[in-house]
Length: 199
Length: 147
Length: 156
Image (tube, rainbow over all chains, first blue to last red):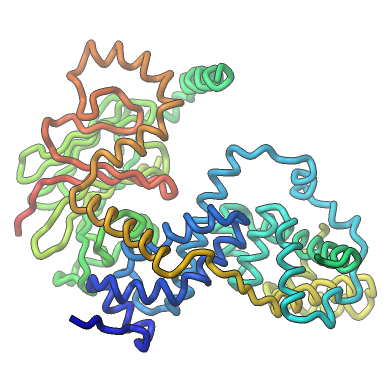
């Protein structure tokens, strides 16, 4: 018996089939979005193992809640939110056991970013796309979890301050100060990376 | 580990110093809710539950996506006493305040007790008792501690 | 960061009300430092806008799906059977340490006054004490919600 091919179906058609229990249709959705969902998890967790585990968990959760998705956003956006929430839960659990470094506490209390000179020249200008990606990735990896998270949610997920505050369970003021620090720190890091050169 | 135990003992001791005013009365909101995948309830009197309740129910491993409020009652229960409220002709709930955020909840269906549960219910906490209803739907009794 | 810097960032992110936007714009006309800072923030926004995350999942399609599928089937089985054991294990693990202190004190009084409960020991969170209710308990810690699913049927 030949299997039906889902590769030419639109996302919503696959969602409707999956909502009726068609696991093969769901598998096609997984195949389409697995990189994106994994990438988002990795950008927040910075651990391949955690990102794989959480992305898998996100797919399982999505299957269980698929009937709640009615197309109010794209499937990719909805799915990204699922994995973001799982990552945030995991980060909260990890934070309970994490020993805060003095530097991290200093960052949180604010004022450190004032020591950074304003970056006036774009340190990434003229770089090839691939090189740019590598440098930004390296710089993001050097931010603390909280600062990276707020940057990811604001710059890549285009969430407003209010929504970020809600999902991160902090005040809007904290979101703003973390975002400000993250941006300034990123600028400084990119300048440093530019000077060192990236291997 | 010893520090953890000391902290736990300290926490337990701290509970005993809760103010008398905080223990005087318990306020619980009880809602009878109908869960379905249909977009509307056949009864026009049923309104969709509040967004807050809806979000909590959607986080649970239930397959229903739409929830409608059938009835809602506010129970004010002094310490060491209980209150019983009918949520429908066939459903009633009794909440007994045992003190220190502990409650004993009894659910009645057609006059018979169907569940008795002792539960910690601090402020903001929600207890949902639920079961199958005809036509692949669900009934839920949502108890939320207000004060 | 001071209030001026907060407002500058919020201005860039379009999070200010119209009158506040005007105030910032007026201030920018006379403040070169603020302009320089705004330029930096704008530059970083632009850099990140050009960032295309090309991270790939380091597992083949088939292998990854086999793990996801296993998880889906396990979740479906758990939902169908009303997996009490999973809920109890998760709940128990969560409360074991802080409940330890309570358990010793509560157990003495509980054994004196009550019969053995559904889960076989005292627990601060909750317990169903009717025999054989067939209840399944699930706890969502993120929303502070406990679900008790009963086998009680309802009729029209």
